[in-house]
Amino acid sequence: MTLHDTSTPICHGQHLVLGQACLEVASSDPYNTLQLWAQADECYKCPPWYYLTLAPNTTHTLPVNTTYPTTITITNEEGRDLYKLGYHFDLYGNYHLLLDTHGAQGVEVTRQPESEVLPLVTAILFFLLLMFMWLCSKFLVRRMDSPVTARQPEDNERSPLLSRRPQDHSSVLSDQLSDPQPSTSQSSTSQPSTSQPSTSQSTSASIRHPDPVPLDGRRESGRLRSLDAFRGLAIVLMIFVNYGGGGYWFFKHARWNGLTVADLVFPWFLWIMGVSLVFSIRSQLRRATKRIIIVARILKRCLILFALGLIVNSVGGHNYMPTFRIFGVLQRFAICYFLTAVIEVYSMNPQESPEYVWYWKIRDIVRSSPQWVFTLVLLIIHATLTFGLPVPGCPMGYLGPGGLHEWGMNRGCTGGAAGYIDRVVVGRSHVYSHPTCVTIYASNTPYDPEGLLGALTSVLMVQFGAACGRIITTYQTHRGRWSRWLVWALVTGLLAGFLCSWRKEGGLIPVNKNLWSLSYVLCTTCFAFILFTVFYVMIDERGWWGGNPLRYAGMNSILLYVGHEICGGLFPWSWKPVGQHHSNHLIMNLWATSIWIAIAYLCHRRKLYLSV
Image 1 (spheres, rainbow, N blue to C red):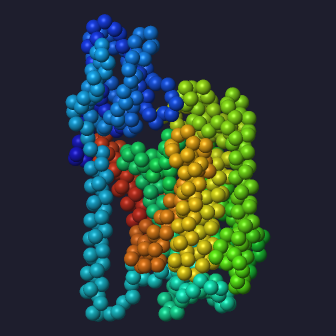
Image 2: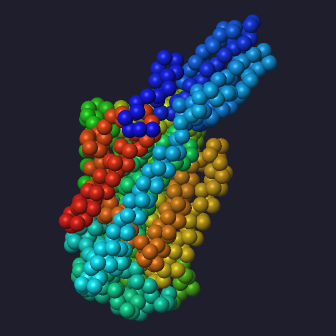
């Protein structure tokens, strides 16, 4: 499919668009008038939509959805079901369905559908080829330079695990740029260390030392490359998803229950924020900074983040005050950061006692028990409000999307208690009016996925990230770290599975990004621990990869997030696709994402970092 091809199949007099196919329905019944009803299987417990009426011996065509499997119901004029069939149509295919007195004869393909996988596979192979060419060019440059000088490269896969960073940068989304992350040098033992804290506060690049450096004895000024790369992956995925994700359904948020690639990004950012705030607060406390001053800095950052979130909400002309949206992504960051960081400030002991105790192998958990108790209290409040708060006109503990859900019995109950609280606190007109459930469930009730009640479970996500950070600052061996991360991944994954009963619909607490349900937080936490472990082993332990170019994006994530939100509809980041094919959208979205990676690289080269 060429870039300039604008032709798509015509169905019922109109060109099809992404996510559609054409179905021709023919009735050979000479006596009965038939009615066709259909509904996407994604719409759980929903009544079917009426599509058309077939007079005897007539034929009709209609566009059908290709994103989800569809259930087609044929009834007579009295509404009695005659037969049903399910089918998953493919993009831009032509299909024929014959109905006669004996029932439906099955769906026949009359025009082969377009491959949805081919553009994605082509894009992956293209970027792998670029990566290979880049690595080959670097190898050739090294080979040409090595006889002349023993130059030490500053920023590539052979550079030290801790790299140079500018002084006095700090940010929540940018990993608190002012606060040094712990050295990734591995100690020869995990026994208690008796070394004294270093008083050096130099911000020069760390130099690899032949002797291991115990984490609880000395802090190096630098970056944990795997964390920067993980953050970079999250921001790159977020940009790609927000720009359209090539038109693929799995790069869009789930309509209600369920999990897609797009649903992983936001919670990963919260998890990463938890990791980095441990380093930030520990560093400040070790410099003997008063706790009240640290809290004041935290409050300042939160206010700036909340204000930035309001500015982002106004992009695109959405600045009409009577309907201005209050909540958003950065606002959720601000709330969760404040709740987690303040309790961390007053509960953290920056100087770990080297004395052996019976809980030595889980001392990171035991010594952070106040933080976990505080988080548990928030979860109890969340559960009490979710399942015990009376919502007018809605069943107690309702977790559905409203609209057509449960046969349309709870149309105005979108989000249950979570949606009701937001509509009461900030007003119905200031709540997000286009939730993801609108398309499938036809709900017209405003609902904000970044509302107040979901912030309570989001704190748990940040706390799990903080647990990862405490493991890094507590245990000195690589194996001691990633083995504990994998245990956390196993525990959170199993808990998530039990809560949702290992299925998408019908569990006690379904995996739901809109509600930020407990199972959703645990599930995404599991993925975060696993993926970060992979990055840590590859980058910081084995040194197989330096984390580039994801690391460039991760070191300037706040700039990329705000920038892509403001510039999203502008050329050269976006334009009207010249064809309704995945290839057209994929080229545009990957190009826009690549521009932001290039901007991050240029900023890194010039030591420019946006922080709050």
